Image 1 (cartoon, helix red, strand yellow):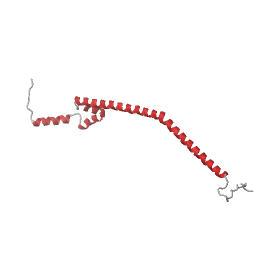
Image 2 (spheres, helix red, strand yellow):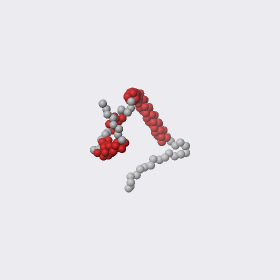
Image 3 (cartoon, helix red, strand yellow):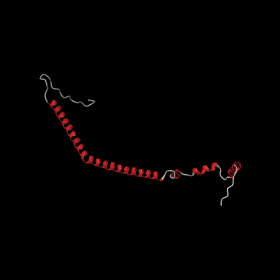
Image 4 (cartoon, one colour):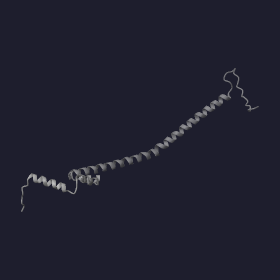
Length: 143
């Protein structure tokens, strides 16, 4: 059986003050214990605040997002591989052949210019009264 007693407000306040003064711990020491607690421990304690249904929805959303992310990364990687190998097999040989053709055309053009220059030097004067240039003799220095 429970026995109820009426306690006056003055007695109750005196009892609280005496308990507080007799306490082995102070307010400052209570905060020291929190410093040992890691961020992970604090997040785990917050888990109980969020309802189970909401936690399950968040977990399923995160799982779905992760799955879509993995699928996207896989698709992009495979696409990059296909494009790279296709370029190496199809476009690179074509580019090399175009470069060879341009080099051949440049070589032929240069050869034709040299041939034209030789013909101009070997042919006579272009005008009838013009004298042909005489080759100059080279003298050794000091003579």
